[in-house]
Length: 163
Image 1 (tube, helix red, strand yellow):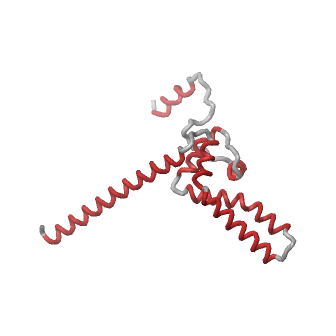
Image 2 (image 1 turned 90 degrees about the vertical axis):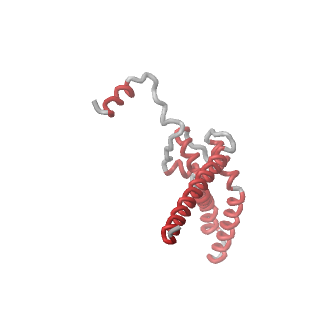
Image 3 (image 1 turned 180 degrees about the horizontal axis):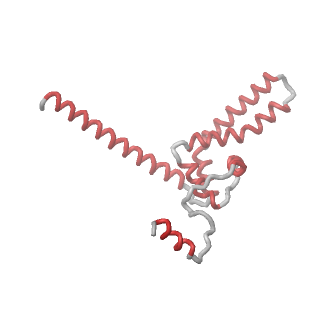
């Protein structure tokens, strides 16, 4: 019997129905749900792990900016379509609103992402703590990489000088 054949009977004999993916799994939302999420909506429970992933990966700040651009697209489009002014003035107003909106969005970025994580059911501070742990792990890997490089350079130097 192969490993796959051994695993299948156990999974089928389970009497407890599986309600969905495990709590820690990352299930990406459909595009329409992502737009709802970008506008501040709450995602279903199965996307809980993805929300934490979205707010804690290395590019979390870039993802935040993308969500804010999606939010700001609506007022910018309304200004460009309905403001009774020349196109240059419409573009200037829309651009100024975009810059101002992004400025405030960036100013409250950590709070906004924490709010998304709390909506997903995690305790407040979870995203910040996870980002800090990941940054510490990256720093440790970088330190180890630099030490190994320094040791290799020292060995090459000792090999050339004969010391």
